[in-house]
Image 1 (tube, helix red, strand yellow):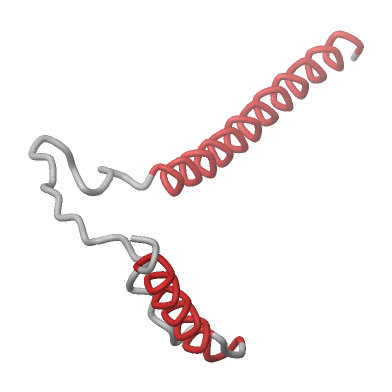
Image 2 (tube, one colour):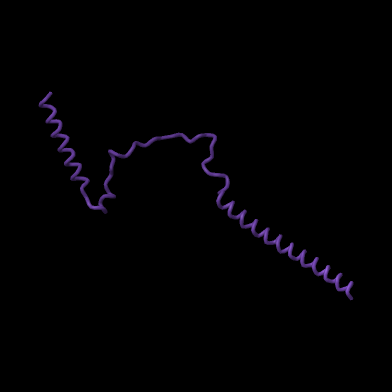
Length: 101
């Protein structure tokens, strides 16, 4: 058993030297090396039956447009309110002019 251990270590050292020589590269070539020993195996899964893959509505887009239209509705309300207040001021001014008149 004592002679088998150094032989096993020599084989491991040769393997590590070969691996280092294969992976000793410059940066651009590094991206073309496949690390198949490190990559996890593929896992096949079933899609759950009672779920949906996509959302019913894209929430961010819907929220943006709702906020946009709410801002337009608010501006319309403010314009109508200003017309109402302005007309009320004109009516009150006419009444005051008729009383002074």
